[in-house]
Image 1 (cartoon, rainbow over the protein chains, first blue to last red):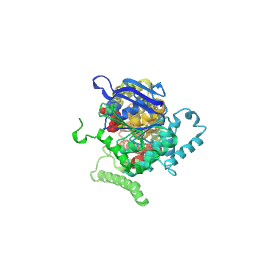
Image 2: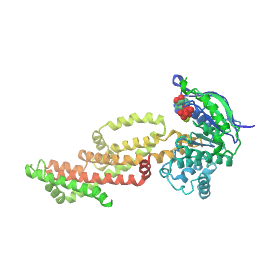
Image 3: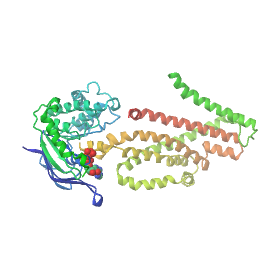
Length: 264
Length: 257
Ligand SMILES: Nc1ncnc2c1ncn2[C@@H]1O[C@H](COP(=O)(O)OP(=O)(O)OP(=O)(O)O)[C@@H](O)[C@H]1O
Ligand SMILES: [Mg+2]
């Protein structure tokens, strides 16, 4: 199995000297091409930091980080990212927001002026695939939170990135919308075979979507458990009610949990 | 609904203004205030009409020097604001100097400007510029600095350069701040022009008022004040209109949040 992303005993800190914060400690993991991984763990354990690290936005302090066999030295340039906050540009409509990455990433960047029409069609198709047909010309404030999040995910996918990084993308949504978007994401990933790293607080979300779930300990973040979810795909929402599913969720819950015993 | 809007936006300020003038007139008559202390509203409007030609003439000079100074301040303020917002090091370097410069009362600079450029329109334009560019710089820089770090991550992960991020996000984001600062800047520019005119100029409303004052033509002095107030309102309204036109999304966006 060839790893797309390879981390070998990676540590990472914010800041320097006495005031530095150790965010990640000796993390080793491999992400295969097309794999869907989820990272769960207590708040502040370094999940977002891990994402920024793999994207090349923040350098590691120690350890080896390679993507496609090459050491990462700066932003990867082909990563799609989406966050809990949709971060759409309010002066652009949904379609224009989705087109934003194409104005930055080569080779689209030099083509978009001349082939704007084709690109627009592509973006409209993508928006339609996530259930936003008829909303392409709407501005962010005319969209519901769920719609904004769908748009944000489309923006992360439009340039067909190798890796999709999602940081609690459904955190701010209600339970029904969230489950609906799980299915949207599941289908998008199945259709495109994109490699996904999902950071989440929701264990059911992690188990439902991911092939592999990593559990991180509280700060500094280490990986305390790697759990392969052996539930066959395609998964239906119904699997979340099966004992097999519940058991995995339970096990993960115990690893993070310790809620009653306090933080230490 | 339309009627209500009209009542609030037109009738109410008009009534208030007229009432103010009436009270002014009455006060002057009842208390028999001498003309040389406070001329009545009628006297002032009389002077306004009688000297309409020199007043119009001088208003024009004040207006165009204000606008010229304001235009320079806008261009300069925008560029400097982008520079200051670009990088923390530039910000740290320039900011103290800017604040220091801004706290010099600009009246104190006018004599220097007159010394350099002679009596005329140039010192007025320069004063208007010097006094009004600061809020533009601060606002543009603030707008640039408020780009969400997550959005910056999204773009950087795509390989966007600093310039890309500025063009796609920073500058559009700072536009509402920029247009908002224009309202403040135009008012300041106007103040700058008039201050400079009362110190060293051969034309302009400020100069007209100065001359009238030394000739004890008090009604003309007050006519000058009225004209200044009127011009100030016009200039402010103009920039407010421009602001609304260009940054409608910012107002609508906020209404929903
Ligand atoms: N830009 C930063 N500068 C300094 N310290 C930071 C920065 N970002 C995060 N940290 C610190 O690094 C640690 C890990 O933060 P991180 O954001 O990765 O946590 P997280 O697991 O994503 O938390 P959450 O689940 O609450 O989002 C935290 O202790 C935080 O204080
Ligand atoms: Mg986080």
